[in-house]
Amino acid sequence: QDRARQAEETFARVISEGRDRHAHKKGVLPLLGPDDTFNIHPVILSSVAKSPYFVNKCCEKLMDWNMVVDEIYYEVKHLEPWTAGASKSPSTAFCLLLRLFTLRCTEKQITLMLEHVDSPYIRCLGFLYLRYAADPSTLWSWFEPYLYDEESVQVRQGKGDVTVGEYCRLLLSELDYYGTRLPRLPIAIERSFKVKLLQAERSEERAKQHVENEAAMQYFQKTGARVIALYGDEENPITWYDAVVDRVILRDMESGEMLHRPKFQVTFTEYGNTEVVTLGEIDLPGTHTTDTSEVGGDEREGSKPDYSSSSAPYHDRRGGEDRSFNRDGRG
Image (cartoon, rainbow, N blue to C red):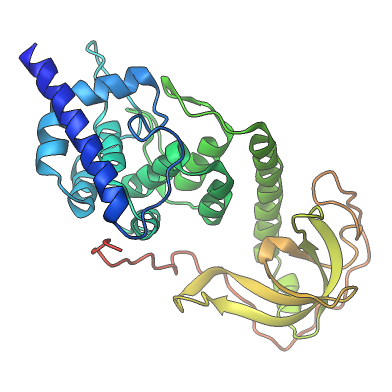
């Protein structure tokens, strides 16, 4: 009884501290839903809140974001909500996830977690934090850059690794999560994710095909090369349009780091608008019917352009990305 009372009092205290922190801390990521449950299923929430590890270690010794991130690095070995064994106890990952919620992460801190170079578990707990409590309308912009991230992570105890990208796609497409349930997404957003995930899958497959086709890669790098590219906005579905390559982008425009794959600045000839598209969002004229949607659109074989180019081919630079980060995540 004393232990249960201590756990209850400790949880109430850290919830109260989190509310105060939210009121005074700049840049806190807005959370959707109750600020004392964070949309976590009641069974796992109650078990975590009573866990000696959560009460005595997480709440009493891990007093800021940096300390929690360090603890994730050293202690988290999988991402399931429960530990294996006869006694069903909450996992270290979910205890630390709840502690992050009570500390209230800033947008900068979440970004640093997603980009962390030292541990995929730090990255994946950042994604899980977002999936549980961030506004669902913001999730795609957070997740989209990582949908095909190839870093390995062990999600299930004693099972084979998956990639961070596979984990991200799971969080956006499933409600069941290894013995618990994720919060339900609004129907319209759930449907849009299904369409966008299909589009992302096709784009990834197309990008891989391009990388293996040296002649096509050379052609894409010609300034003025006529191509077709995907474009869509809030009012129009993503569709193939005729375009011209203006510039090849080989480095991240913010960090200056070499991109895993090139991007292209193109001008759409019909409307004159200029956009930046990925390698998977560009193709050779004649390979798709223009003015058709990417999902369910007609694809056909056509004549191929002259690939001759003096440009050197872009080689796939795997491992060229540097997700380095400033360890001081206070922002």
